[in-house]
Image 1 (cartoon, helix red, strand yellow):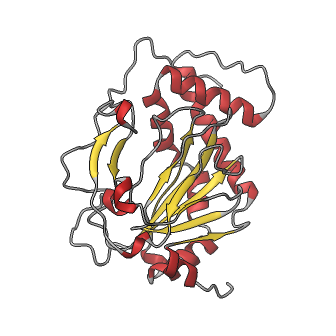
Image 2: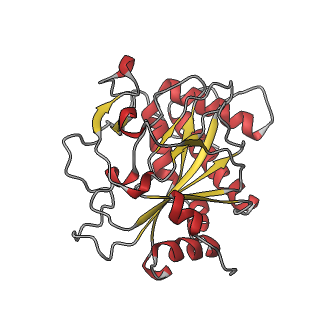
Length: 282
């Protein structure tokens, strides 16, 4: 392993690593995602013919169709993906463990990896987007962890819905507001994500930077780094792969639930059965 200077991470709260991932590992991960989306679609009796032989276009077609038919079924895919063989191979990448271990000041053997899974940014759609927030609000009982983010299939740009980060925002703690929705037009709409939003007014003096990087790149950011998704104004889905790396050593809880939190809102239970559900065939 080569020496890495983490001064930018310490100063800005985030740091990119270019050409980090093995393309074969990412392709295996995407194929697992594809397979799970196909399985869910078949169970729901959806038509899978996308009139294309291109793998990425087929995936886009199935993701859009599944989201339109049953968004919760697509959410279940992202949860299943974490426990696939392909995901475990990415999570155990030696260089990834080396970097995160160094930043956290923790032995590799003590690292707990949550992920990888996929965030989906649909064209002209806000239901799967997060407003300004810090991951520490989602994991308030965890004192030492990192977030990682990587584009999949296509580079992330300002046009196709990338992540924005607020530079140096990790140097203080932030208050937040809880609600379902993304903006005033969607408040209390539970088909949108739950938000722990840091209001724009609170961070108005911070520099906001779009993260524009390529597939195979890795972006690491601090647990208190304020960040947000942006609307995908292109006509194509954009995807990102996310992981969190924890060391529970100094946490004041015995719980194994990394996301344990005492707030009023909790994720809403979703019934997993459907009318006329059927086994998938391949």
